[in-house]
Image (cartoon, rainbow, N blue to C red; front, top):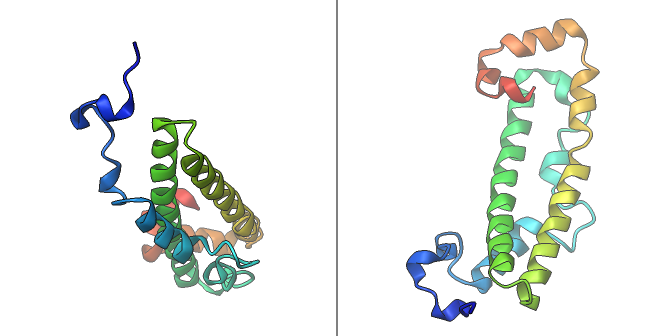
Length: 142
């Protein structure tokens, strides 16, 4: 017989509270970082569009903004995903998982210009970027 969730020892469950104390805390971060009501969710990324040829420092700043946002959205996703996996019939978890999955898709769309813009840089500029000290720890991403 399959046990109900409340019958399982907390030691045998995911510690989702390490991510968020409850759904209300998740919703606060979702509102702050998801910006579902905005057409362009993350203008702090799009401000770099067309400017990556301005030096390695510009690329570094853009990468830091993207990585920070990805970490925050990944935390939101992980919580929603784990809560959904706890009980796939839970409507709140289904909706949350769908919302954050959609936002991650939007993030990929809003950052889709980055790779082509980097690839359009002249080879000499790209070589300079690849050897720039400020980009060494993100070189693999370039």
